[in-house]
Image 1 (cartoon, one colour):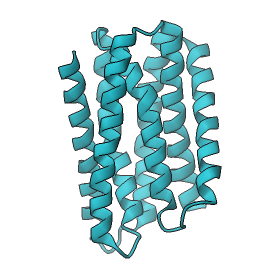
Image 2 (tube, rainbow, N blue to C red):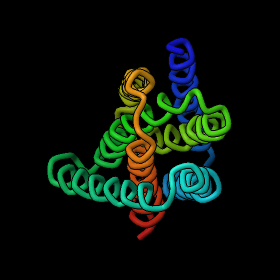
Image 3 (cartoon, rainbow, N blue to C red):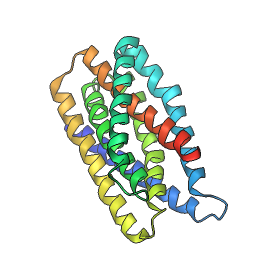
Image 4 (cartoon, one colour):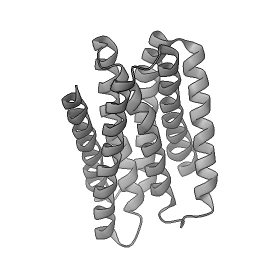
Length: 211
């Protein structure tokens, strides 16, 4: 089962870097600007949440655990946002917040996926959605970094952080499989992951970047 965790981590790494490649290609098109990329990320991630992650989570774990976890995830994101708002530069702040948010949300996501790998129906749909949404996340992080003047350094920074994000997911997916979490706690963890993604999609991608 650890082999599956390694493979999933590698696929998430590839998805993140595919998103970065898409951002670099789109950024070369004169009519495509950073706000357009953020809008695209927000719409894709919101669609994944509404059509895939939330329905499967509610069906498997019930409303209360998922809703409470999602609320907790949003509150944690709000705290991270306020913390980073005053301590990071305007140029790198969006990218830093996105990386922090994704890293933290990969903890409950890794635990949730690791603890449900034996459930083929849930794991297939949930893992597929998690892999797909790495593409807009990678796109958004790279789009933020491309706004800086030091673009070569940004490429190196992105690569290092994509390795870090995959590593966080790998560690906690292995831990989640070993822990055999109760279903209510698992629902809470999935809800926290959904809360992180929801906050990032709505606030960082759709609202803040176009206000």
